[in-house]
Length: 238
Ligand SMILES: Cc1cc2nc3c(=O)[nH]c(=O)nc-3n(C[C@H](O)[C@H](O)[C@H](O)COP(=O)(O)OP(=O)(O)OC[C@H]3O[C@@H](n4cnc5c(N)ncnc54)[C@H](O)[C@@H]3O)c2cc1C
Image 1 (tube, rainbow, N blue to C red):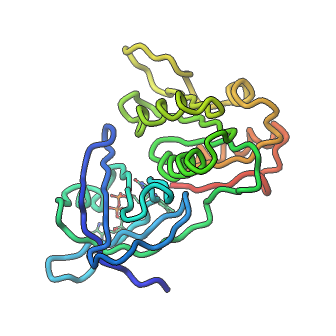
Image 2: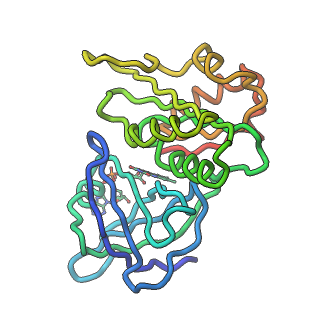
Image 3: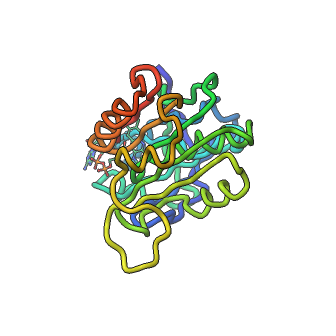
């Protein structure tokens, strides 16, 4: 089993409405562990006496080729754990265990389609950035859904990546109502929206991350589109 390691908080910032980002570096100054885009760590919060208070899993949002000495997390505020994590200050220490997980890129696939809902963008953002840093001409499509405009994490960064990389399309869809002007899609990602943005859907590799109903619903839609989901669809639920 991987031993928990002490990390220091070097940044705590707001990323979107109800989402904050932590940057963590190894407190001992030793090199960071080697990880793959899409993997997660266990974040342990401690009591003042150093005993473990609680732990939870968080995907690494940064790209391994980019951040070799720190990890970035994007955390949606929910219950006690996340509200306590949000209180972390620069200089505080936490314990980090990992990396874990097999929700990673299939490097042999030629076309990658990422389907993310809410904070499910986190491992997908890592995979997208890694792929575009190492293979800038990669054929990539992101369909990213949120209820509110203010809930989209990394929207500015994703749009900038799409501007820089002609083979990367970033399609956002809003499931709630808004008074603000909105140029993306509206409503849930259904078969029509998928087919509109993903030419020849049966030939792509898929990465799905979000709540259970999102991942289950989209898996059914992929099957209807002729995708062999057992082989071509990679899933993470949270
Ligand atoms: C693979 C994976 C990756 C994930 N990646 C992300 C991500 O990138 N971003 C994200 O936002 N979420 C992610 N999640 C979800 C995340 O792990 C948590 O489920 C979520 O943040 C829970 O938040 P919470 O505040 O409701 O936690 P809580 O339900 O409050 O607590 C989580 C843990 O702390 C314990 N705990 C809570 N309160 C107390 C207390 N008072 N005393 C003692 N123990 C307590 C609970 O028993 C539980 O073990 C991921 C989940 C998985 C499985």
